[in-house]
Image 1 (cartoon, rainbow, N blue to C red):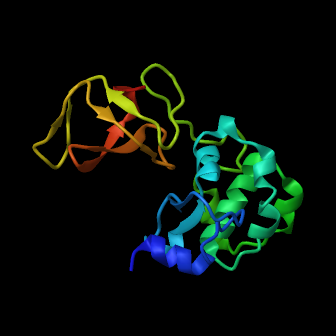
Image 2: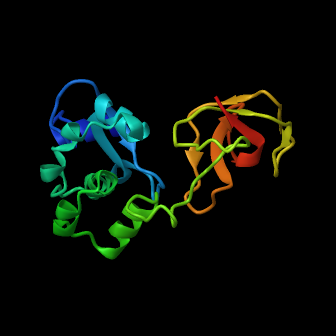
Length: 188
């Protein structure tokens, strides 16, 4: 059975954060640990857009976190913790309980950390990169471990950030996921 169908069954066909029933989409929490259903949440496209584009966040859309933070599903708890951290809602964060492993997973993206400790990914021009951004290679890159060469000008869409190293991002080039050094890309 597909992950989307399993999530629909688990959530009763509703957004696991807000409870809406329209425009639902699977959202995979990063970094992934084991893969599968336990690292995915079924949420509305509106909330996904706000997660991926922090500058578009509407705090009123996130009032639902008062309820979703108590979910029995770890992925929903982690996403709730991350969004409460992003919103700076210390009152609700202090009420939440996450075991050590779950809290470490929630903190893996840098949410809730002081800005000076947060890992920031920047392209060759110093522009901040976010998960889901599109970049263009500014130099031919030989891919280690293969005979492939990623050509200058190649567009890499929907990048993922390495949450342990500010110089690395991941993206798909010619159907293969590769690690790319940020100094060789330009945000589009």
